[in-house]
Image (cartoon, rainbow, N blue to C red; front, side, top):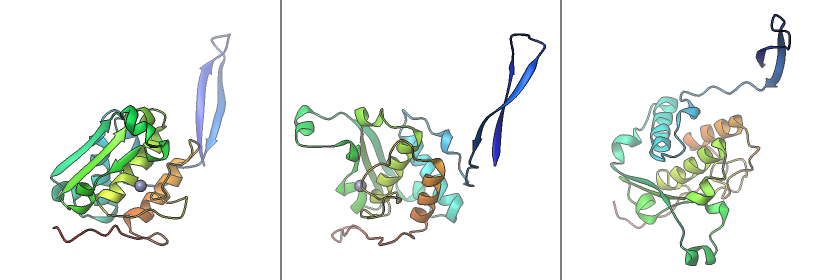
Length: 184
Ligand SMILES: [Zn+2]
């Protein structure tokens, strides 16, 4: 258990008071700092993912094998919006990304991105890297990164860490891969 201790000053300045603010669940160990990403710079999510795979499994180094990396914000046209893109699909990866092993090609819809909290953003980006790098299909388990929807805003960092551990180990129920024509 981890307790945050708040030391503040009361009306009478000499009287410092200590107060237990919250008893939080201790964060599961991980070899990267998930708070190090810059939310406006999607490449920082790519760099974090590359580091995470290297330090949690010892590789492979996707930063070295994927030398054409495009991870970018996109703005939907009114036509695209009318054609039914929903907030569950705030990000997408393309055929070039998942069927060519040296290419990462991911778009994120900025309007939807801005409504997500930090953990939802991590979840979305790892989900897209899952399609693009691992060629994962969607999972039917809502606790998996590859579930088709980003989780609710009350998702916890430990939910993410547990899910991403299974994801990086390629060890989740019913894992399936996108079939690509023989291109590489
Ligand atoms: Zn998806």
